[in-house]
Length: 195
Image 1 (cartoon, helix red, strand yellow):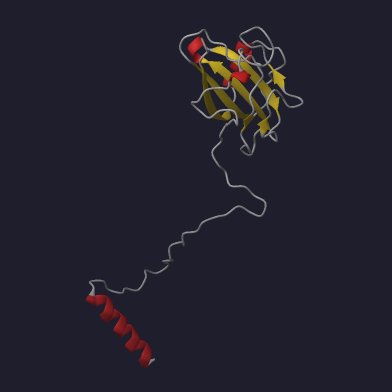
Image 2 (cartoon, one colour):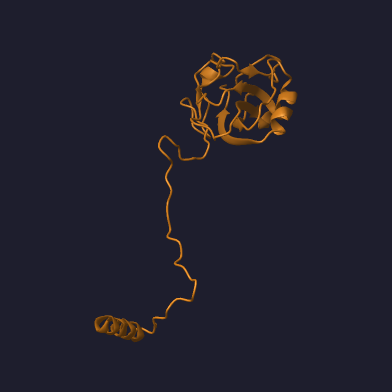
C-alpha cells in the first residue's frame, strides 16, 4: 500500500512539472472509443469510384478511324469493371454535343455482372435504341470536315430497370434514363475527319 501511495505521488509530481495535473475521472465517465479501421469481410470488396475506359483511346484523345464512318464503323471496346452493390441494369449512351446532341448509341438492358464490351459486340439480352442516324445500335463519329467533335460516352449503373427496348426512339430512351437513379462514369473521345 505504501508503494502505491509513493507511485501516485511521483506521477502527480511528474505531471505537475509540465503544467498538467492528474485528476480522478468523474463518476460514470468512460474512456473514449479507440479509432479503428475496417476491412471488408472475407470475399468482400472495397468500393471504388466508377470509371469507364477503352483500350482503343483515352479520355480526351482521338477515337481511332476504325470506329468511325471513315473506317469500319464498329463500336469500340469499353470496360468499367465491378459496379456498385444494388445495381439492377447497365446502360451506355454516346452523344455528340458539338452536333446538337446527336445520339450515336444507346445500349441498355445489360446485367450488372457484365464488366466490359468487346469491339463490335453487345452482350446477350441487351437492347439498343434508335440512333440519330435512323438506325438501331451504334453509328460511328462522322462530323463535317473542319473542327474536331467530342463524343461523350456515359456509363450508367442503374438502381432499377430502364424499360429501354430495341428500336426505341433515342429521345424516349434518354428520357427513360434521366428519370432513374444511377451512378455514372464518363469517357470523352474526339474525332476530326481527314481532308
